Image (cartoon, rainbow, N blue to C red):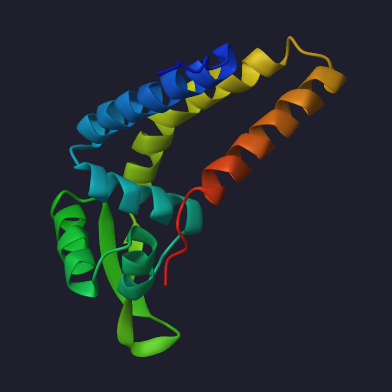
Length: 148
Protein backbone atom coordinates (compact mmCIF):
# COMPACT_ATOMS: atom_id res chain seq x y z
CA UNK A 1 0.00 0.00 0.00
CA UNK A 2 1.41 3.35 -1.05
CA UNK A 3 1.62 6.08 1.56
CA UNK A 4 0.45 9.51 0.47
CA UNK A 5 2.60 12.44 1.41
CA UNK A 6 0.76 15.11 3.34
CA UNK A 7 1.96 18.66 2.84
CA UNK A 8 3.65 20.45 5.73
CA UNK A 9 0.88 23.07 5.98
CA UNK A 10 -1.71 20.29 6.35
CA UNK A 11 0.35 18.69 9.14
CA UNK A 12 0.50 22.09 10.85
CA UNK A 13 -3.29 22.35 10.67
CA UNK A 14 -3.50 19.11 12.64
CA UNK A 15 -1.10 20.62 15.18
CA UNK A 16 -3.29 23.73 15.40
CA UNK A 17 -6.36 21.56 16.03
CA UNK A 18 -4.54 19.69 18.80
CA UNK A 19 -3.23 22.90 20.37
CA UNK A 20 -6.69 24.47 20.16
CA UNK A 21 -8.12 21.47 22.00
CA UNK A 22 -5.39 21.73 24.65
CA UNK A 23 -6.06 25.47 25.05
CA UNK A 24 -9.80 24.81 25.42
CA UNK A 25 -9.04 22.21 28.10
CA UNK A 26 -6.88 24.81 29.88
CA UNK A 27 -9.60 27.46 29.56
CA UNK A 28 -12.23 25.02 30.84
CA UNK A 29 -10.00 24.36 33.84
CA UNK A 30 -9.59 28.09 34.46
CA UNK A 31 -13.38 28.53 34.39
CA UNK A 32 -14.04 25.20 36.18
CA UNK A 33 -16.34 23.91 33.44
CA UNK A 34 -16.45 20.80 31.29
CA UNK A 35 -16.11 20.98 27.47
CA UNK A 36 -19.86 21.16 26.82
CA UNK A 37 -20.30 23.95 29.36
CA UNK A 38 -17.33 25.80 27.84
CA UNK A 39 -18.92 25.56 24.40
CA UNK A 40 -22.15 26.94 25.86
CA UNK A 41 -20.18 29.82 27.39
CA UNK A 42 -18.51 30.50 24.03
CA UNK A 43 -21.94 30.78 22.37
CA UNK A 44 -23.21 33.09 25.09
CA UNK A 45 -20.10 35.28 24.94
CA UNK A 46 -20.28 35.55 21.15
CA UNK A 47 -24.05 35.99 20.83
CA UNK A 48 -25.16 37.42 24.14
CA UNK A 49 -28.23 36.15 25.98
CA UNK A 50 -29.92 33.11 24.44
CA UNK A 51 -33.05 31.14 25.20
CA UNK A 52 -32.48 27.62 26.52
CA UNK A 53 -33.92 26.29 23.25
CA UNK A 54 -31.49 28.36 21.17
CA UNK A 55 -28.60 27.22 23.34
CA UNK A 56 -29.70 23.57 22.99
CA UNK A 57 -29.83 23.94 19.21
CA UNK A 58 -26.36 25.48 19.08
CA UNK A 59 -24.93 22.75 21.31
CA UNK A 60 -26.70 20.01 19.37
CA UNK A 61 -28.33 18.63 22.52
CA UNK A 62 -31.87 18.20 23.81
CA UNK A 63 -33.51 21.00 25.77
CA UNK A 64 -33.33 18.78 28.87
CA UNK A 65 -29.56 18.42 28.41
CA UNK A 66 -29.26 22.18 27.85
CA UNK A 67 -31.14 22.75 31.10
CA UNK A 68 -28.54 20.62 32.88
CA UNK A 69 -25.74 22.68 31.28
CA UNK A 70 -27.48 25.91 32.33
CA UNK A 71 -27.96 24.57 35.88
CA UNK A 72 -24.23 23.78 36.13
CA UNK A 73 -23.23 27.19 34.73
CA UNK A 74 -25.64 28.91 37.12
CA UNK A 75 -24.27 26.96 40.09
CA UNK A 76 -20.72 28.23 39.44
CA UNK A 77 -21.90 31.78 38.73
CA UNK A 78 -21.16 31.93 35.01
CA UNK A 79 -24.76 32.63 33.92
CA UNK A 80 -28.08 33.82 35.23
CA UNK A 81 -31.61 33.17 34.07
CA UNK A 82 -33.61 36.33 33.44
CA UNK A 83 -37.15 36.83 32.15
CA UNK A 84 -37.33 36.97 28.36
CA UNK A 85 -38.85 40.34 27.39
CA UNK A 86 -40.02 38.81 24.08
CA UNK A 87 -41.79 35.87 25.79
CA UNK A 88 -43.22 36.46 29.25
CA UNK A 89 -43.23 32.71 29.99
CA UNK A 90 -39.65 32.23 28.79
CA UNK A 91 -36.21 32.96 30.13
CA UNK A 92 -32.92 34.11 28.71
CA UNK A 93 -29.59 32.68 29.74
CA UNK A 94 -27.28 35.65 30.35
CA UNK A 95 -23.50 35.33 30.73
CA UNK A 96 -22.15 36.89 33.91
CA UNK A 97 -19.94 39.91 33.12
CA UNK A 98 -17.22 38.67 35.51
CA UNK A 99 -17.14 35.29 33.75
CA UNK A 100 -16.98 36.94 30.33
CA UNK A 101 -14.07 39.07 31.59
CA UNK A 102 -12.26 35.97 32.92
CA UNK A 103 -12.72 34.11 29.65
CA UNK A 104 -11.66 37.09 27.56
CA UNK A 105 -8.71 37.68 29.87
CA UNK A 106 -7.47 34.21 28.96
CA UNK A 107 -8.47 34.33 25.29
CA UNK A 108 -7.39 37.79 24.18
CA UNK A 109 -3.64 37.45 24.83
CA UNK A 110 -3.62 34.25 22.76
CA UNK A 111 -5.75 35.78 20.00
CA UNK A 112 -3.62 38.93 19.90
CA UNK A 113 -0.38 36.95 19.70
CA UNK A 114 -1.78 34.99 16.76
CA UNK A 115 -2.96 38.22 15.14
CA UNK A 116 0.48 39.77 15.70
CA UNK A 117 2.06 36.99 13.62
CA UNK A 118 0.25 38.44 10.62
CA UNK A 119 1.95 41.82 11.14
CA UNK A 120 5.13 40.42 9.60
CA UNK A 121 3.38 39.67 6.30
CA UNK A 122 2.63 42.03 3.43
CA UNK A 123 -0.97 42.74 2.47
CA UNK A 124 -0.56 40.46 -0.56
CA UNK A 125 0.76 37.63 1.63
CA UNK A 126 -2.08 38.14 4.11
CA UNK A 127 -4.53 37.84 1.21
CA UNK A 128 -2.98 34.48 0.23
CA UNK A 129 -3.07 33.25 3.82
CA UNK A 130 -6.70 34.32 4.16
CA UNK A 131 -7.61 32.66 0.87
CA UNK A 132 -5.90 29.43 1.97
CA UNK A 133 -7.70 29.41 5.32
CA UNK A 134 -11.07 30.16 3.68
CA UNK A 135 -10.52 27.18 1.40
CA UNK A 136 -9.53 24.97 4.35
CA UNK A 137 -12.72 26.00 6.18
CA UNK A 138 -14.73 25.17 3.04
CA UNK A 139 -13.01 21.77 2.79
CA UNK A 140 -13.88 21.00 6.42
CA UNK A 141 -17.49 22.02 5.85
CA UNK A 142 -17.68 19.85 2.75
CA UNK A 143 -16.88 16.79 4.84
CA UNK A 144 -19.40 17.44 7.60
CA UNK A 145 -22.77 15.82 6.89
CA UNK A 146 -25.69 18.25 6.86
CA UNK A 147 -27.80 18.06 10.00
CA UNK A 148 -31.58 17.91 9.92
